[in-house]
Image (cartoon, rainbow, N blue to C red; front, side, top):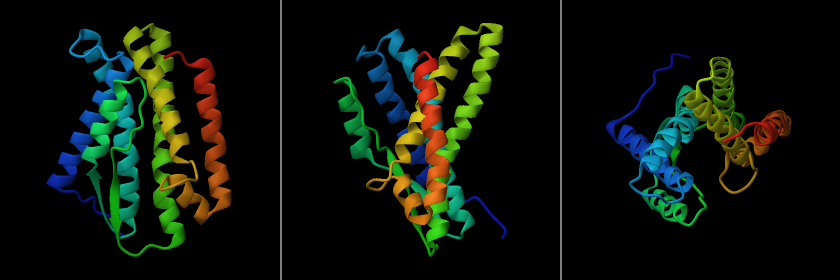
Length: 203
């Protein structure tokens, strides 16, 4: 099947909007609400390169897989949930649902499951990339890269695990409905990665 990646100005706008506002929410949380401070600027950059990258490629993984099956697939930001995330971050906690890839077209149960599992798998790939960067950072004692890589590992491991929960509209529910074997094959290593990140990665 010949695959052509398709997007639109609206989708690009929504992706950038969600990336910026999500990074801002995490920056506020990580800086303890120190608005308009140098530490918040630093945390914004950290969030954009870790949470933002994880969110962006997670959604694009869903989109690309859906388009491979001939579906219309575009990301749409949820401005209400993004604003809510920013408000919550001032109170020291955060629940982020920046938007979703809207999919239309006929797909089978297995195809729908593959579209769903693509997102968490992408986050695990990003964990591996940040893991390599952390090894490089530790070898050359590059403090900035150590901080970015460490947080990148932890947050993307969490994103993968959270999205594999079999509840509500999360990816895990769709994967479980498709294949219990695939669900177990993904959730177990995801849980192990998150556990190891929580135990051994300093953020």
